[in-house]
Structures are given as C-alpha cells and as structure tokens.
Amino acid sequence: MGNSKMNAMSPVSVDIPPQSAPHLKGNMGFLGLFFSVLAYNAPMVVVIGIIPIMVSSGAGLGTPMSFIAAGLILGSFAVGFTRMSKIQPKPGGFYSMITAGLGRKVGLGSGLVALLGYFCVYAGTFPFAGLVFGELVHSTFHGPDLPWYVWGAMFWIACTILGYLKIELSAKVLTVFLFLEIAVIVVYDFMVFINGGFEHAGISMAPMLPTFWLDGAPALGLLFALGMYGGFEVTVLFREEVRNPDRVIPRVTYAVIAVAMVTYSVSSLVFINSLGVDHVAAAATADPTGSMTKSLEAFGGKVLSDVATVLVNTSTFAVLLAAHNITARYGFNLSADGILPKRLSGVHARHGSPHISSIATSGAGLLLNVIIVLAGVSAIGFYTAMLGITSFVILGVIFACAIAVPIYLHRHGRNHSVWSRIVFPVVAIAGLGAGLSLAAANFPLLVGGDALAAILMAVIIGVFALGIVLAAVYKRTRPETYARIGRQ
Image (cartoon, rainbow, N blue to C red):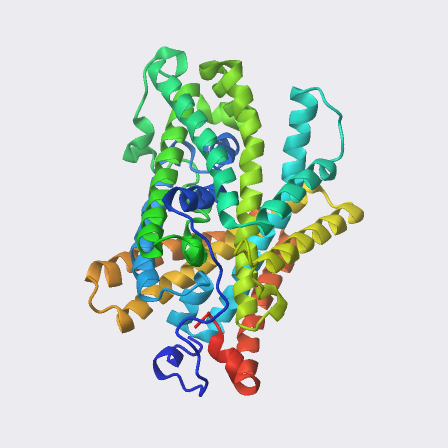
C-alpha cells in the first residue's frame, strides 16, 4: 500500500511541524457544523426526487430498509473514523487520514480524486439549479421563461460571495434553509400518519418486514441509499474552523448519519403508505417526480406542496454552497502542502477563510459551465454525468479511508477497544466494499451511457494515478514537499 511505513519510520530528513501551516480560522459550534454538513445531503431533494425513483426502480418496497442498512454501514465506519480524528487531529479530511494510514502516495492520489469528486458536485449542480429555479419562476410565479444558465448564474454569484466570507456566515444561511426543509418533511410525515395513509386505511409496517427487504433491486437500492449520505465525512475537513473539534466533530458525524437515516427511512415508509403499499410501485413508475408532489398536496394541501417546491430550490443552493466550501478547502490543503499553486493556500486576514482557493473554485466552476453552454451539451446530461462521477469517487475515497482507519488505529490506537479498532471497521469495509463494487458495475447507469462511462472512469483512474506518480517524483526531487503530503 504505497509507503505505509512512512509515518512510523519517517526517512525524510526534513523538520516538519506536528501540524503544517497555514491554518484556517473559525468558530463553528455543533449546529453550524451539523447544518453545513447535512446541507450537502439535500434532504428535500432526496425526499421529493430520489425516494420515488428508488421505489420505482431501486429497492421497491424495501426502500426504507435500504436507507437503514446504508446508515448502519456508515455508522460502523464513523466509529473508527471519529476515533482516528482525535488521535490524528490534522486538517485535510480524507486526504490527511488516508495518508496517515496508507502512506503518502495513496494519500495524494485519494486527495486529488476527492477534490475531483466534490468539484463535480459543485460545477455539475448549476444546470439542475438553473432548471428547477427557472421552472419555479415561470410556472409558479408566472415570471419570464429564460435559459437555465441565466438562473444558474444567480446561484453562482451567491455561492461566490458566501464562499469568500467566513464559514460562520455560510453556516447560518444553511442552518435556516435546512431547518425549513426538515420542518416541511416532518409536517408531511406527520400528516400522513395521522390521516392513516392511503384511503385512511392505517399505516402499514409491511415494508419493514424481512419479506420485502429483497424487493425490487436491493443491490441498486443500497447503492442509491449510500449515495444519499454523502457529506458526513467532511466534518473533519472543517476541523480548524470548529470550536472544540474533539467534542463537536464526533457528535456531528453521528448526528448527521442518524438524522439522515431516520428522515429518509421514515419518509420513504410514509410515501409508500400515502399511495398504498399495493399501488405505490406503479404510481412511482408512471410519474417518478410528480408522485411525491401529488402525495404532498394530498396530505399537506397546496400550501405545503408549494413550500416544498420552493425548498427544493433552497436545498439545491445549500448543496452548491456546501460543495463549494468543501472543494475550496480541499484545494487549500493541497496547496498548503505544495501540490497545487502556493497562492491557493492564502488565508483571509479578517474572515479566516481560504479566499483565494474559494475564488479559484468559483472561477473553475464558471469556466466549465460556460464551456458546456457553448458546446450545446444537455444540462441534465451534464448534471447526471457529474453526479455519477461523484457517487463513485466519494464512495471510493470513503472505502480507502475505511481501510486506512484500522491500520492507523492498530499502530497508534491500541488503547481503544477492539470494537472501534477492528469489529466496526471490518463491518464498514465489507459494506462499503459491496457498495463500491455495485457502483463500478453500474457506472454506465450512473453517468448515462457506456461510452461516456469508459471515458470518465479513465479520468478518475488517471487522476488517482497522477497523485501516486507525483508523490513518487516528489520523494526524489522535492523531499520537503513529499514530507508535507497529507498535512503531515
């Protein structure tokens, strides 16, 4: 595994401080970090857009259990992950943790791939944002019917401004949006429950029974479900901007997984009951996007349905802002280690933010979208491909971290229990390995075609290989840079 003995033997004769500079500044507490991370999951988009698709073409009636299974797998990963974050309290997120466990070569390759994955979410979501906001303006508020990139530009401007400023401001904005999303979802779930679901026949718990666990395509259902928890892992990426990180980060990590698991599993059970256990699959297949909207209107009235439609837009903006902030910080950390241009590791004197990396992120996202518009690429096709890359890449990086955690804890965490060092990490490796295998097998489905899948997979593998090669070159030619890889 690359240079896994590097940390223990440290043959590079360069005096590197325990935690390499520069450092970001911030004062986020539990709620700020919680909502900043949960925003990346886009709960409203999942409930309205993803759950009906999972019921129609994924796990079917087993959808609630798919979310529970995915939550348990990622919860198992979080046990060792949070332990390691305390023992190895360095910035850099996965980039740092994988380096500490699997060596600098694999660490740098994983760091570059993670940067690619989060940037794809940021750049790729603008077309979707433009489409849904344009539809809201034109259809709901009877405004002008303009191209998606006009509306998408508004999202870009807002993300650029907020991403430049201190992280607490972004956290406050995301807190308001996410609180409203969760509130609407809770109201909808409650209304279905008290009204007894389809034809007031009562809430059926049949989807929770083992009989339906393998309904539909359970493997695809698990793959979908794992992808809906993305973002919880970046709690460690914000370490320097969090108040009392050793306490806050583990709590937020578990809280995000738990809230997502309860929200998605309960809401999918409610959705199934709202249309009837015997009818939901046909209804969701016939109208995947409209079936949830009709359910919202049937049980919450037009007001709740309209509010949910508006919140899909704020939820999409929350994803963009969260992805922007994550991408900027990956760029900052890779720059701080000398991998990317040094200027990107500048820290704003007043805001404590990675403002140069933030500007670069905004510029790269804008450039890619301008190219897409000029080339006449389908907005939805581009969005699908970018999210397909992210789904595979981030799951792969989490899997690499799941392997790195027990290796690191074996060397440096012997005082921790066997559960956190071995048992839970093994469960996580098995579950995430299965998910990654499914993602690889279904990659053409994720990105929208076999030919495109081959090209994009080559890009992903190429970026990972580039990191390994760069690390090997730096080891011989720039030992001071090699020693800093992974913020070590």
